[in-house]
Length: 312
Ligand SMILES: Nc1nc2c(ncn2[C@@H]2O[C@H](COP(=O)(O)OP(=O)(O)OP(=O)(O)O)[C@@H](O)[C@H]2O)c(=O)[nH]1
Ligand SMILES: [Mg+2]
Image (cartoon, rainbow, N blue to C red; front, side, top):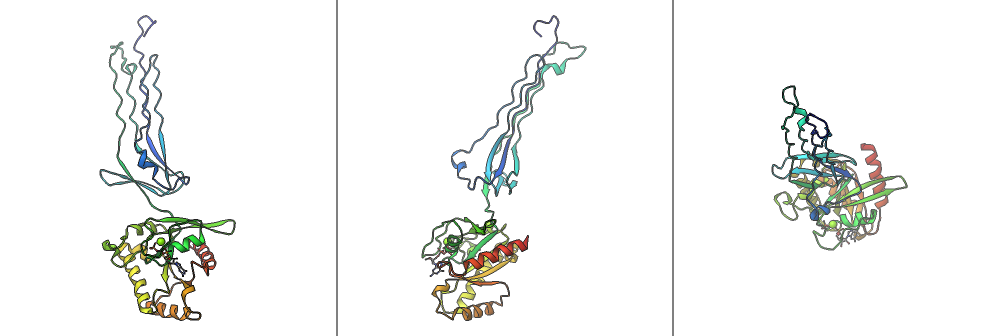
């Protein structure tokens, strides 16, 4: 120690390195920022100082991610975090601990130890982030059934709508407001077809986005054909894809929503629906709407809100 005659060792401990933490926030809803900026490092701990002062610790680095982000260890594919709600966080790389200064090694015998131990290295990890859509209600159905048209008509979301199948390529979310106080979130996913679980069409990749919803609206184009059996079979094949993708999803509360009512000659809609549901032996809720004309959509969204409240 300087200036103190026969002063002993006075090297303080090194500070701990900062850790890297991911935290969920509702302020973000995509992971696109990580395409550009995807390497992060918390600050180092400072070296220990003289007069037995401990070096200051590094600051933790907090990275904000959207709610619904799942964090995987890229090497092992192990799920290491699942950030669902605002504020949920996950420590993904722990900072190293500071080394011990030479003061620690002072003893009766050794008054001037040269010894100190170095700090440990902080962890470094390669992660894969996946965003699972968090919605209350999922729209499900064949391509071209009118799912995107429905979400456009009941929310501010504006996914592409077009007169050809597989228009929607990515899930979209829309917030449906009921009165001033209530709302729910709907997810529009790409249509699925028979064989999707074997990779036909866009596959079932998107069905996983429905796994956390509480209610599924199965949208059906009632005007696709006059043949009830064909429509019933299409509904069945969507059900089969659901079942083979995930039996839990199949058991989830699901309502049938017949769409494109505006294209059905007056007075025929109910008997068509009765035939189809009869063929399916369907006992669940049934709605008939025209997404494009916003006919029946208000009733549907109000019932959905009530249904969600009841499921809570
Ligand atoms: N007449 C009529 N046409 C509709 C109605 N709803 C949707 N359509 C039309 O049906 C076509 C397909 O609608 P989309 O909303 O893109 O269907 P989708 O289910 O999202 O289709 P994918 O994204 O391919 O799965 C478009 O041409 C829509 O304008 C409706 O209520 N009445
Ligand atoms: Mg669509």
